[in-house]
Image (cartoon, rainbow, N blue to C red):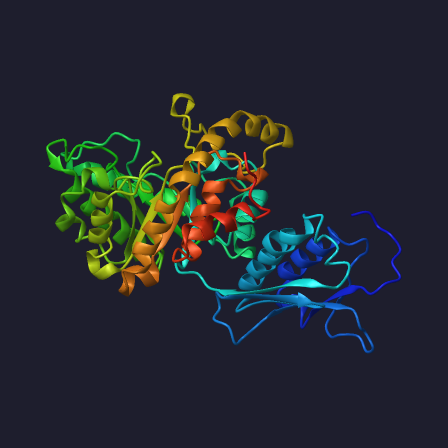
Length: 453
């Protein structure tokens, strides 16, 4: 809105301490400025004699660290969270969902200037504690905008699979942490590479290779490593060896070596179910210090093709989160635009990540919007399956529910230009999948961070 002199009553923001939740204050300030013709001042306390509208932004120690609360009505709004990051999430809810719900309507657009906010009360916390995105690094075009969209969707984990450590890796980690996002570096421990499992020296060679790769990535910081082996096949055997047994051996030996040098390192095993789904007795033997992040466990939302969440997949999901007492359970859910493998090539050497030009971003966005529109239509029809899968995991109880990791395979979706509807549905499903499907879909469609294609 253009600046204008205003003699009427105005809004102010109060924050007990700007330093305690700076991003939340920034977000609320920007949101109000979009709809008001003046700069909204920020105070620690309400100035004596002030009789206008007050938006209070703060960290509430009475709330659990990951809970958010937004309460509005008339001349007041309270935006809070149990931590700095949760307060940021609450601010985004206010900015992206609450304000646009009435300020974009001609009938109610005068409510803000008139100090007559519609009544609204929201309090919630995430059902799935670790909610994230899995992506290849070379299709992150602007890492700051990419992660900001994640934060607007209350996503707090990012796994980046890259052939080489990014030259700006330390900056990427720092920015992720500023948004409460855990950064996991993904790289091959055998995926996409040829290994003879019958050769006893193959494992030792890979152990040494992984040690070097891990050192190269982790010198930039980060919160853990993610790996894949040779399980992305429908075959049960390779080189005369049972894939499930060999995968467990490789995972345990290489991880044990890493942990001997980096105690406490978070290690995530990206395990494709298609080659091991009948050998869960072997998978039970994975070192308990390793998280298993399952992929390709059956129908949507585990598979690429959007459709019904079938009973066979439900049953298999039940079986895998009971493994190892439910500890270290996670999954990568699919059904969105993925890489064009006909044009794919591995990177030839290290480069900066997520520093593309605006020209490239606009050009590639136009080329991909048609694909994403198709995904969008499919998710409007079948996206409830994603919420059902998240609800199933949450209802399992025990360690699997408390420590579950769910990530969305988000490859080349240009979320820098706005969240896709499927990603928003995934995020809302992880936050609270117990709602009716219509409520989840409505929350996504009414979120200003989502760009409908």
